[in-house]
Length: 157
Image (cartoon, rainbow, N blue to C red; front, side, top):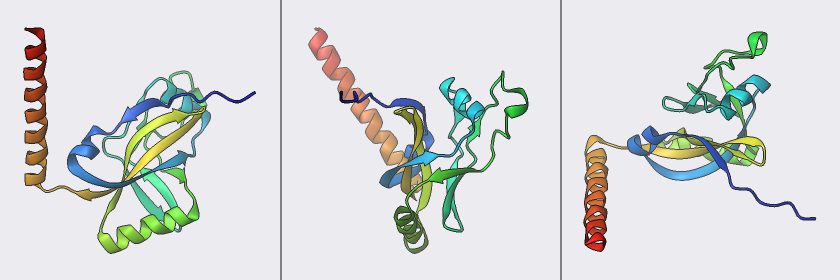
C-alpha cells in the first residue's frame, strides 16, 4: 500500500527575511533537535526573526533561533538560543559556502515546517536589500492591495 503524501505543516515564517533580503536560491535542510525542542515546535513556540546560518568547519549551524523551553520539560530543556546543527549534504554545503565567499550572500532561515513527522527548515541564499529597494517593494505591495480592493468592490456592486 502506497504512503499518502501529506502537506507540510508550517511552524514559523520569517517575514522579516523577505523584507530585508532578495532570496536568490532556496533549499531544504533538516534540523538536529532534542525531544523537548520538538514538543515546543509542535506548540509553535519558536522565533526565526533574528536567525542566521554559519558554516563552521564544513557543517552548517543555525544561530539566533529561539525555541522556548517546553513547560513540562524540566531538566531536559536546553538553552533556548543554542547553536543547532543543520543536516545538509556536503555538496550543498560546498556550493553554499562558495556563494557566500564569492558573492557576499547570506544564509537566512525562511521558514520552519514539519514534513513527514520531521522538522525541516527552508534556507535562503540571500542578498541584502538597500533602503530604496525596501521602499519599492512596500509601494508595490500597497499598489497590489489597492488593485485588489478596487476589483473586490467592482464585483460586489
